[in-house]
Length: 242
Image 1: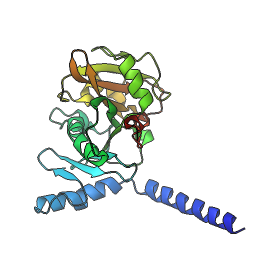
Image 2: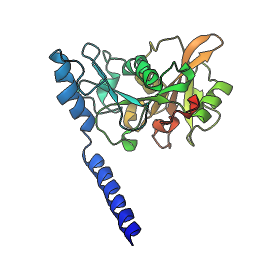
Image 3: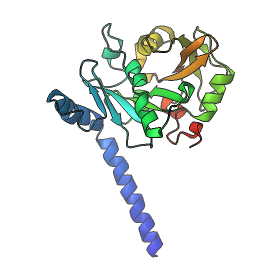
Image 4: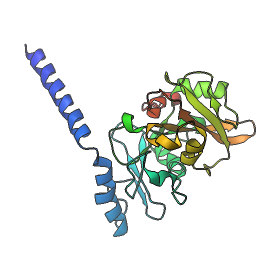
């Protein structure tokens, strides 16, 4: 009987936490806007964040989920992938800022991480809990890493030949050690129907090493998918033997 009571209490507690999270879709915005940015503006460091780049309009925050995951969050109000600001001509390249922030993941891991083990992901509006744009910086699952190694995409958009985490993706490669091209307009201009309904899109960027040199694999989910590119990531970083 005692075990039943404990189990019931635990279930209620977890349900309450989940409900609290769902009922507070502005938690990330409140942390960055109310704590991190004011601290940085007053010269007191990044506050509750790991980094605040006022000039680049981005903050890096250690996510409570996962031992190694970080988030890149705009310092200005950007609700998510559907916000018109992501496609504005002068929009910051938040994905590039997220890629630059991979060093925090590596510092938490305790050593350098191969570029093809690192991924960036943003979920669709229907697969997120927060109404402030945030890009997940985390390890890639071993299964997805192995698939992209075995069958890297071309420089042209095409349907990737195998499902990744049970979803179908459009894929293309980007050349270069740094992420100079902004993935948001690349997806909006190439994936059918994306620009008209960015909120239904989900995007992942994966580091890669091609025979021609370093680069990236850009993934955009095909229509009818889960809208959850974060599913390509592994918070336990098993790809590193963790």
